[in-house]
Length: 272
Ligand code: ADP
Image (cartoon, rainbow, N blue to C red; front, side, top):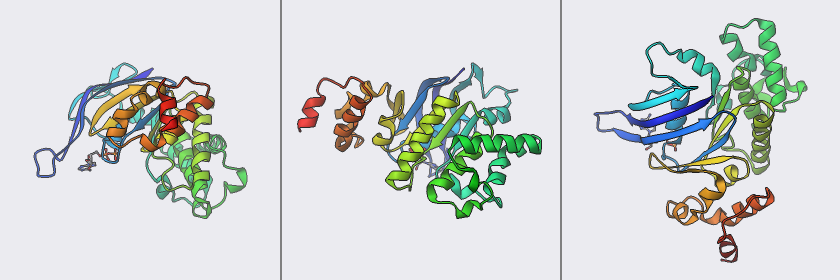
């Protein structure tokens, strides 16, 4: 099971004055079960890229395979793809709207045509996975704290039991405590729920501690795609596109804490 992109290009508003070549010849593969970070500046193409993964937008050119099947094929079932690849948008709590948390999380499974009992079962399971206590289930989603709202929104996608969970800047706007809690929770989900997790961020700190592999986007192209240690070894190039420099020391510590090797010149960086 995997997601494979081959030479994907995406152009917004093609042929108009607003034309924007947002993805340029992007090729990459994400095997099942991996925890992948996608990092890059605002405007580097991260959101455009992830919206391709569940077929929400269609590449201008190139091919995308989900479990070996071309999702642009004539008879491909995009609805099923959207059930399997769950996308959590930025500020997902803006989409909470039901009378209580449980109902809200039930919305997705209900749309899948499942029975009310099955919907509730899945919703409870999803809320448990994101660590939201049962006492909140009958609260209005609007009465929750920022971090809790975000958990509820993530649960809404998990209740569909996706095989791949894609999160676009899940920590945006949260305080440091809320940020750490959400990231720890996502790491826990990855371990417990046998899911591929794709985490989009513009923050190296967020990504460095957790992921197996980092895809660095720059101006619509893949700049690096490798294990963290190898990506950070290119710290000078990362710095040249304004991505890493002040955090390099922090990242090296994070890697060491994880018991990972650090690039040999890391000590030089720490002393600097
Ligand atoms: P990121 O998620 O890394 O911030 P995006 O994928 O949102 O980057 O944007 C990539 C590029 O495409 C940017 O230059 C952005 O301005 C442009 N873009 C994004 N969405 C649209 C849109 N709906 N119409 C036109 N251009 C867009």
